[in-house]
Amino acid sequence: MMLSTLSRSPRTFTLVARSLSTEAISSSQSQLPPPLPPSPNKHPSSKPISRTRFDPAPRPAHPPRPQYQVLPHLPPSFGRNQFLPVADSTRALLESIVAEFNAPIRYAFAYGSGVFDQDGYKKDEKPMLDFMFAVTHAAHWHSINMNQFPSHYPLHARVLGSSFVARVEDISPGVYFNTFIPMKGVTIKYGVTTIDNMCADLLNWRTLYLAGRMHKPIRIIKDDARVRLTQQVNLTSAVRTALLTLPETFTQRELFTRVAGFSYAGDVRMSLPGENRGKVQNIVGRQTEQFKELYHRLVVALPGVHWPAHMETIQQDTSAHARAAHLRKLPSNLLKHITEQYASEVHPKEADETMYWTSLAGDEKLPQIIDHELRKIVRQSSTAQSLKGIVSAGLGKSVRYSTEKINKWWNSRNASAGSS
Image (cartoon, rainbow, N blue to C red):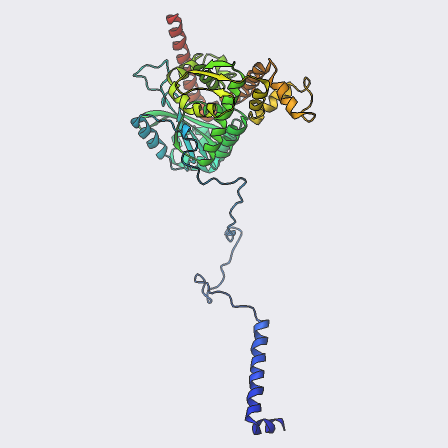
């Protein structure tokens, strides 16, 4: 009956057919999921790869979340005081040596008497070139480096592998040295540390092992924005610490000597016949221009300090209020040790913070306490590193290194005795 009715009415048939077709399309769209995009790497006919525990499927890539803000770059003028010039031949040699390493180095610098002149060396004498490399992952770096330069490591380190080397490096102060390495016609020594360890020491002076070395002139070979930023903090901390131990008027040489001496005060090697007692004076005597380039802009930027560029005399405000501004901004590890010395002598900081810092800064014993705490920090790290040197260098190189140090000490002692 219905079909006959539809056949008699073409218009009615068309409307019903159109409504039925529309319902079918909308119903199918609401129930079916959207089609998957075609994959160019997979074929429908290919069978899935069977996996075993010896051939597991690759894990999905999840980039690690950074624990700190990444600094891709800094303004070109920031930290320009850190880039100290050297002779073109020296620069080319240093850069060619670092370029020899296949393992990735994020930050590299050279330091010591092989880079900048020091008193106590003859003109024809070629001292060892000292390098410091900051890397991202220590075990990975040593694995690549051990494969490229196996002779740089002692036999036991090669047998135990890069993970052992990384564990030794991780022991405070967090540096692993390879010594007496012939390269490019010279003898070098290079230390390896992680970028995290370096930046932590520059900020907090946890060991002062790296921060103290970087208080003195260095030649940057590979730059890193994060290290440049924390190094600027480190240099400013050195100035603040020195100002707290210096009188109202002093010379630039006194400032440089005080800063250069931080990493040697308390060094266990200075109490043994293994280090030149006049090391600090030898460094400052021949590197005055480099020290001034490093520190002059930082010093004059501090409130209460007057140092004209053409003069060698520096004046500072030594009032308790001005000294308190320096004291409260010292590196956290040093500041913690200082405040512990005053724990039973002053009112708690929570009662009146301004009065607390002013009381500490105005104490006459503060310079001696700062010096004492610096010595303690350096003594611990230098002792640990000296013991690590036997493991990292091996017995043979350790004896050779100690013998050369003793010979330098003996020669410097005879020279000073002859001059007097």
